Each structure stands twice: as C-alpha cells, then as structure tokens.
Length: 361
Image 1 (cartoon, rainbow, N blue to C red):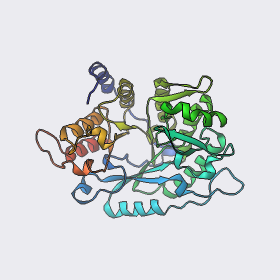
Image 2 (image 1 turned 180 degrees about the horizontal axis):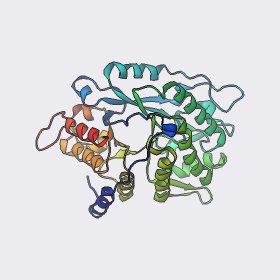
Image 3 (image 1 turned 30 degrees about the vertical axis):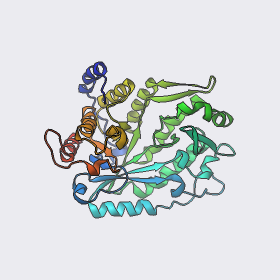
Image 4 (image 1 turned 60 degrees about the vertical axis):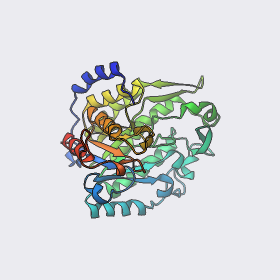
C-alpha cells in the first residue's frame, strides 16, 4: 500500500489550516451531535466490540421503503419503515447511534425509474447489467426524492439515536453520487442517450439533492464525495472533474452549514493522487467529517488474516484527514477479526475510537 510521498507531504500543510465548520441549523433549532467514533456499516456490533464500535448504519433500499407510487403524482405512496424502526429500537436498547443510508440508483422503486420517461435505463458495471436506474437528473425524479426526504424528516428528525442521513438522489450503483461507472460508458451510453441525459442536468442534480436535505433541521446529512466522473453527452467521453467536486464540497457547507457531513466511502492508502487532494480539501473545511474504509480485501491487501499494520494504516489516514467517524467493514477479515486493545507495536480499535470521538469534540 502506498501514500504518494510528494503529494502527501504537500497536503499535510493543507490539512493543518482548518476552516471552522459553519454554525447551527436555521432558526437556531438545536442540532444533534455529529456521529463519532467507529461505526459498523451494516448492523449493530455485538459482544466485546459493541462498547467500542458503538454506532451503525441503517441501510434501506428505496424500492423496499416506498414500493408504490402515489397515484396522479411524481412521488411515492406510504412508507414501509418497519426495517428502520426495528433498527432504531435496537439502537435504543444498545445505547448506540445510527446513520440512515437510503440507497437509490439501481435500488430505486420501479415507478421512480420511469419518472421523466417511459422505461428504466439498463445499467452496466463490470461488463454486465447489474440492474436499471431512473432519470435521476430530471425534475420529476427530484420531486420524488424531495417527497421522500420530507416524509422521513417528519418521522425521524427528532429521533435521538439517528444522528445523520445520507444524501443519495444522484447515485447509480452505490450511495456515492459522484461515481458514474465511466469505465462502462460504451455500454451505458445507449440508455443514457435515449433518456436525454445531459451533463448540465447532472450538475444541477448534485445541487438539488443537497437542497432536498434542508428539511432535516436537527439531523445532519452525510455526502460521500469522489473525484467526479464527468460524462460529456456531446462526445460521449468521460473525465475526472476535481474542480466540480471541490465546488460541491463548498456548496454542501454553504447550503446546509454544520448539518453537512463531508466524507468519502473508499478510504485506504493505495489511492490515486486526486483522492489525497480531495481528502485534504475536505479536511481543510473542518468537521463534521466522516469516512468509510474501502472493502476489507482492499484495506487488508487481500491478506488473511488481516495484519494490524494494514488496518492501522487506513485508520491513521482517516485521522490525518480529520475524521470524527469511520465506517468499518464487517466481513471475515473485517473489523470483528481486528484487536480491540493495543498489541504493540500496533494500536487496537479502542485507541482509534477514542481519538475519533475526541476529534468530534
């Protein structure tokens, strides 16, 4: 695993010059504390790990949460919040904090995938169709996403265990709106072209999905950034647009203030330089900042068992770029196989949890 030596040395200067996070929610509504420490990205931790990894992600696919459309509208009908409510009850019982990640893209309802058009768009990743997506860049799809946030906020904005929610309207495969699977553009082009995709409309989507979360007055909203995979619909070519990513980092904080949690969902040392540049830009904005590690296979370098030196390096990286929370993978070689206490010369999870919580203030 590597950290580009020259880039990392330069960026450490950027990290040291922090910009304080912006203030409270509108009308001085009391804002919940930020999610802090180590977080299980899938479910509550158990056993000895529960006191250290004391937060978890509630994942809800939009198609399961709102399967039916409200007749005569551009939005969905009644919500089925059973899974969310059960998870929050478990958080209450365990004294844990949570993040709500509603995943759209290929996991959007079929009715939402036809908004602004007639049929869903086949979506390719890894050379194969992995599902279909909707016209996420259209006003109609935006209406549906706004209505979803309105309803969720009305139910959960005051829930003390739910500390942040994920911004995900413009996503395709993952809840990472700045990834467009551009390595598959030759396969995805026909569907996008037929659906009337434009880069300008996509850019607007990124602004509007942030604005949609203004209805969450007490609960923060987490946005996973990546070096933006821009698609040019005239030449049907792709590029990496770091400037746009920076603009949207700025816009999230301008629009939501301290309610905007900045982050990235693929942190580990062996990343291209443009990730280090982005992490430094995020760090300079100040908290709240949250990261998700890459998969356990990547973090561990495909080594089994996962060496402490590998996951220590990833968590040190998150601290370097001023994280106050980190989502961990739960797999056979994930965090449930990592040590809780220090095993010199390596640190344990308790060490990192304490430093992250301290960073959250």
